[in-house]
Image (cartoon, rainbow, N blue to C red; front, side):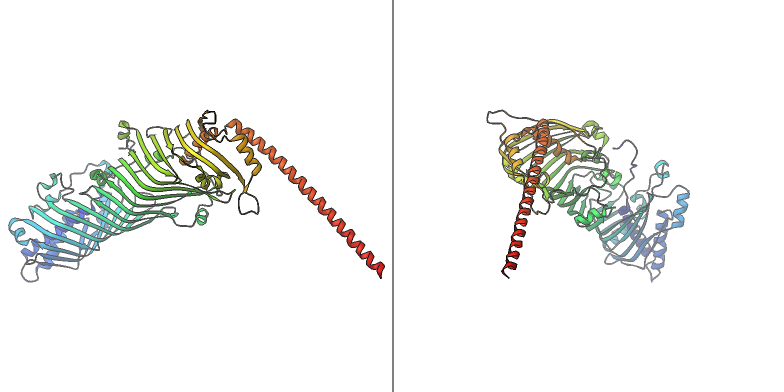
Length: 622
């Protein structure tokens, strides 16, 4: 749990329990009034008076009720309540605020129709035990206004009455087999910040099973708030991000207290605009565009008391199945690049407002791809990780948990470019102030020509041949640097250097420079023909603006260069040689152009001389 006191935890919002108690009061009051005023039609006005008095009494006059009709059939045990409303009294609420006694949440509820079936009237009358088969509530509309008051954090408040204490004067036991709330509209208004925020939920369904309220039920540890189970379903949930750049959608949200399970089906997080319009909306700032899709996200073994009472997510397992993570970037858009220090994934987790510990996170059969459009080449490079499976242990931002175990461990296996098996392990130190972590792994055998999709557009290199045997790496890294070792085993490495030529649609080859690179610079085998292996030491500084995933790639590239014979010393010589070669080529091209111009001038002179002679001969003949 956080120790800095920055996020004060409030008790769980108990509006479902409030609704249930109101229903109990209605039933109890209605039954009492019906029994007392059964003759003629006198029972209805008395019923209304009794119900209103009960609600006023139990809510300290903060709420009153309204309804158009209440029918009760004592023979069949059925009852119907129409156009019911629970309305707060703002004048009373303001007085409670002044007296520092107001609650943090204010409710407004309206229900078109409430139906009760198989109400055991005889047993209720004789034994004061009320049994109800089912309660069905259609189209309830609930508004919750949240306004946190400091006096509720500091003033000691007496223990509120339990449900049994409220009903014991009328019944000694209440048992309801099932309560169903269908197609709920929930509007949550948060007034705690400088700007009022609204959150709306439509098509919310709640099923409550086996409710028991008596003198012992509050001590029954097998029950969750007097019930054997609560199931909540939300269908077709949609929301836009605050910047309006993305829209999130969930086909169905499901929550079960008996199964201790939460799952989200059909999860998508998509940009609202085309790639071009997206960057225009961000004023051409640099950044990635995300496209996320998941068939199902499921959380098992949820600690319900912490989740509902303290808004803390503590769970055994979180599964993400059959997902797709697509990231796109265009380096033509520069904009203002912000510092990435302290923003690595494990560090961002520590800043999440929701305290959490998930003992195990499983990712199954997920496609991860990164595409970058290059301003120089005009093409888009793509790197893919197909059929990705991962296990991540100890996903937490809880300070107490980190004192016992400060490490988050990730084991990942995937198909790199759908060509070779890649296994990677991460070890994040969650307590580190500099974001210390280690990553190591092995990439298995594959055809290196598959790399063309990545290096041709972004590095202007065409891989003509490369038999990759194995690549192993081990790097200790942080927000500021990376240091480690890379071992790259390969055969028959041959590349062709490319360039973009104005007016040409396709990338053009640099034949002479490519031959120079393959012959004098790049070693085509590692180990070489003499069995000597070239290691790839990694020692790279991390620039503040470099993102986590970009840094992983740059650190490995730092070790790849010396592995193929392209160390820093050679790189300097090569750059000088390329400049000289380009100068020679430019001079040769200038010489060729000059010679061509002179040749064309001589041809024009001869043509002019010939034309003049022909004209002279024509005149002489005349």
